[in-house]
Length: 576
Image 1 (cartoon, rainbow, N blue to C red):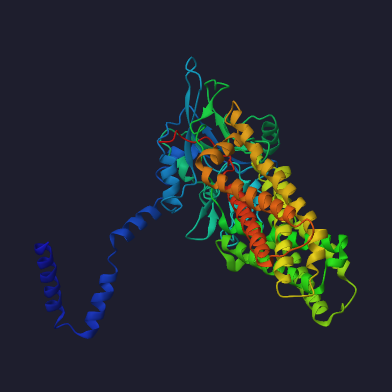
Image 2: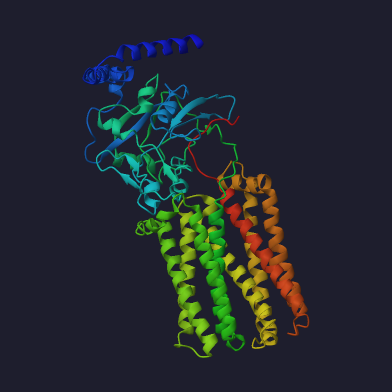
């Protein structure tokens, strides 16, 4: 190193000595002449530009179509399974060309194998985006950040439009869109469309040493027919959902019992904690308004302007907190306003619009209730209409929340199960909050008819709370019946996760629900059947404890809702 430094120093000194006596004009000419000498990078670039045909073209030109697709056609990947060796050159090339992060991949390699030893079978499978005829990612995106090219059929993701809600990750059954946390957006394969436009092969096609991947032209009508007939790839998700266009070809007979290499793998999914908070608290807010409306309708004599106003303010605060927490789930929360763009096709957009409407109605309801409480007279006789309106909008919003997850086609998120859970959460927490507010308010206000409430309404609320909690616990426990399934079904994977990997959370969920939603309400109801409440501080502690435990149980249940669901995907490799 010392020799190199000395050499450079000597050379620099000689140049300075040679130029010391040169005039200014000649010095400028010298430097201009020096700039004409190209660097190694510039010489390489010029040499490459001088060639009209890329050197590798003779190897990959036959692997891409000579013409663009015609009407009713589109580009598609075609994979020769017999030629794929699992070398992952395609994965590396895709990663390098697209500048992906270390933990990011747009193409994966898995395998299929037989379950029987008398018919051994092993097949490597390379997979990427299938550029479906009816892409679920595009249909579910709330900001229209996906487009399907009318000429080529390629499904592209528009990075600048994405807000990072990750709903497309849940919608795609092939685990194709990948969330990039650093950029706050989702990204995916676009079949190297810019290269195809210049008659160059995609990175994966060009890099494969065995020419196992090529681009072909397929008929969209035939693709739909094949998908409806379940002609795709063993071990892959149901193709009738999105109509994938990728063609897998092999001369071998694939055994009927072939399964993915990761068939027995059970993996906990992402918790999505902001969504856990948002779902539970929005349903709590709706539940408070709904239960309050029911009490007003059935027992008008125990409702006062003070009670209604306090309940409305509590529900409003919780609802706004829930909506605020939902933005923490977004990779680019400053662009959340775009989420209503997909209202026509996305349930996520519909949920956002409905809960936005619910929040505005809740603010008006709270202001109306506070006016009635302060001035002891209604501004307008709108009480019953406001109750009906806000409860209706809230229930429809909860329905849209359930549809978001039902639309992903995951069995554990089926509409019947999800909607039942969400509505029962609203009922359980709505009753718990109403009980607590009634008793806590009575501690400082003489206007609250506590004796009448304890004799008339409290037993009914406690009874419904116990019943709702038991029903919801039964719904949650029903998944454990799938532990006896012979096949590794999605619901069996969920049951295994809840019983083993997430057993502590599952135990807390059932224990908290049992104590907070069954034991405490039963003791409270039986201990005050005559309506006499001698120890008010103790009652406040008991009802608050019941609310806290019920809320904890619902948070645990919603955490399991996300982490224990079995996510569909293409065949993966054998876990290490």
